[in-house]
Amino acid sequence: MGWPLPDGGRTLLVAGGVGAPPIVAAAGLLAAHDLPFDAIIGARSKDRLWGEQQLRDLGAHHTLVTTDDGSYGLGGLTTDAMAQCLAARPYDLVMACGPTRMMAGVASLAEKAHVRCLVSLEQLMACGFGACGCCNVPLRNGGYASCCMDGPVFDGSEVAW
Ligand code: FES
Picture 1 (cartoon, rainbow, N blue to C red):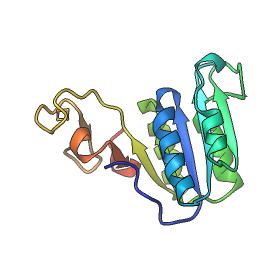
Picture 2: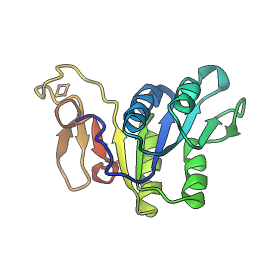
Picture 3: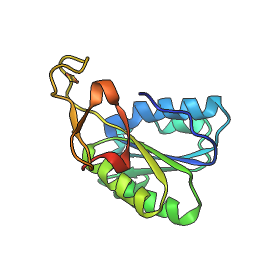
């Protein structure tokens, strides 16, 4: 499945590195339906950042930028900025895409804050139709889901990070 349309309420988007394009697509979906959202976008450094202006142009109310090396925006991780956002205002949904370690941290923070979290996973894919198993995602309740057939968007609480 792709990004589902939220029922309403405020969404927090979290993008890290190459996860920015799917998050900009999520912002476009929200904007097209007049749903409010804030955005966090992180990169290793300023010269590797893409998507900030796109998120602002699509109507993000609050946009926080982080860089690992502190060359732009807040120095630190997207999860640091996410903790600030969760403390500042209520959210009904988090949508995240980026490195697996980042998404694991995002899912954990969202779970602690009792906010639903959707993650768009980036797995190596060979066949693309559920046959080879190389894109399998381990699930918290046991077993695996196929990223190519069942994802790439999963509920973060279902994934065994
Ligand atoms: S890419 Fe082969 S099962 Fe998903």
